Length: 395
Image: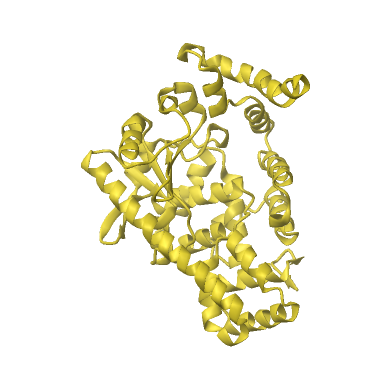
C-alpha cells in the first residue's frame, strides 16, 4: 500500500493507525484496512504498535465502532489497556490540580506542559491522550522552593537537591525528575523547555506572560500559548525523530483547533532562535500524514534542504523505526540532528555538547566547588574512560 506525497510504502499497521487518528476519518477506509489486518491475523502487533505510538485511546474508539471486525480477545485487551489509561490520566489530572493550587497559594508561577492539561486543550477530554507523567515549567529562581513542596507531598528524587542550586547544572540542563513511589506518579520539573543544545533561549517570564489557562475539573491550569506550544511540540517531535505518532496528532489538533493561531509570530520566533527548519519539518510532517491545513507562508518555505529532511524522516517511518534497537536509534537520531543543524557552527556546537556536556552523574561524582564548574566538561572524558575502559581492564 502507498501513502503520502512522497509515495513511500508504510507497514499495514502504521497505515491503519494513521487512518484511525485522522481529524476527518473515513469509516469505509478504516474497515478496509481492518479486513487486511484480519487476513494477517497479527492483532497483537497492531496493539503493541498503538501502545508504542501512545494511541491506545484512539485505537479503542475505532475498535468500539467496528466490533464485528475485531477478535474478542483483542477487543478485551484493548479495552483493559484503555481503562488503565483512563484511571492513570484521571489520577495525574487530580495530582496536577492539587500541585498547581499549592503553587498558586504560594505565589509560585508555573506552566503545565503536555500531560492532562494538553489532553483537555486539544481533545476536550483528559482521558483521550495517552500520558505517563506530569511536566511543569517553572522559574529557575523557584526551583528549590517547588522541590521542597514536592518533597512535602511525598515525592523523592534519586539526585541530590543541591544540583538545583548549582549554576553550571542549571545552565546546561533543563529538568529534574521526582517520583512518588506510593502513588506511582512522576513529575518532571523544568526550568527551560530544552537543554542548551537546542537553542531555546525563551525566558520563563516571557513564556508565562504569553500563557493562557485551560479548565481542568473546574480549575484553571496555566498552559503555554498556542504559538509557544506549537513551537515546543514541533521541536520535541523533531528531536525524537517523530518516533511517536501522538506528537504529530497533537500538532495537527493544535493547528486545527487554534483559530487565532499567529503562525507569523511562531515563524519569527523560530527564525530568531535558529530552529525554523525543525519547526517547518514538523509542520510539513503533520501535513503529509494528517493533511493539516497550512497557509502559504509555511509551504512556500519548503526548501530543498527541508525536502531532504522530510524524505529522511518519512523513510524511517516507512521502515518502522520503532523496531530498531535503542543504540541504533540513538545513532540515527544524532546523525539526523546533525543533518538538521546544517550550519557548520550549529554542527560543531552539537558535537561539542554531545561529547563534553556534563551530566548529573559528573556533578555528583566530582562535587567541585561552584567556582570550578568550568572543569566539569574536561573531567567528563576521564570519568567515562575509567567507567568503560580502565575499570574493566583493571577488573
